[in-house]
Amino acid sequence: MNKLIIGSHVSFTKDEGMLGSVKEALSYGENTFMFYTGAPQNTIRGKIDENKTNEAKELMKKNNIDINDVIIHAPYIVNLANNKDEDKFNFAVNFLKQELKRAETLGIKKIVLHPGSHVGLGVDEGLQNIIKGLNLVLDEKEGPIICLETMAGKGTELGKTFEEIKTIIDGVNNKERLLVCLDTCHLNDAGYDISNFDKLLNEFDNVIGIDKIGCIHINDSKNEKGAHKDRHENIGLGTLGFEKLIEIIYNDKLKEVPKILETPYVSISGGKDRTFPPYKQEIEMIKNKKYNPNLLQDIRNYYKKS
Image (tube, rainbow, N blue to C red; front, side, top):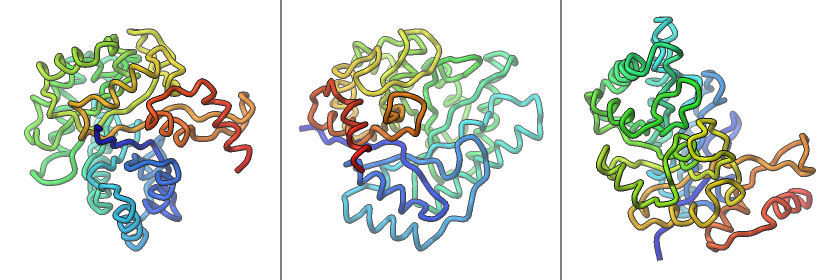
């Protein structure tokens, strides 16, 4: 049976830091996880508590979570593709350098990054700006790896094709500090056919190289192929479907690659009240390889009881 490295996005709080992240991941039955080291919509970052970090590492060891499979996600407001305002561009570069240092302090080896949006500068100029930015960020041979995420192509997003990702990698001097994060929803929304994933992997291998896949975001999609919208859906409830996602998760070529869920939170009433993470129930479903048609109701019932 394939080794399954599966987790989800979890929180990283000021009080508990990575220790809280590990506890949350374990509560969902995970053996890896991904987190922001602060709010994803800003660059405000608190001090890392060394004692909590050491406790987190001990808890990971006890529960067979390999820290090498754990991922940090850079905040999505960082945009290396836009150099219209030089101060903002330099801030993005310096912030990413600091985020890499934070990852190093925590012992995390991989950071996922949205490549950026060219905001009207054009694809070529945007890609060159990303390359310039990454060369400034990755100016040392050693250190955490940046995983460039494949994007849906919403607005002026870059990284929507394998060729755009390859252009970035080719232009960066320290290529050994770059990998790729495949996102199943983004691939679909960008126009890739994930129904034959082996064929898609062959295409990726021909353009970039399969050894460059550092992690995979497992998300269903609310959209048809090529919609360029980037709207995630819960596992099995979208246009990709449970069986296709299971084929990707258990693909033999990707057994050593961490898989991370970023599916939508579920409200108790189905309305606009407080929402709750679906990961415990979705991961159970994935481990059983059996679709649960009552997924949303089971999630609601679980949180009503707790």
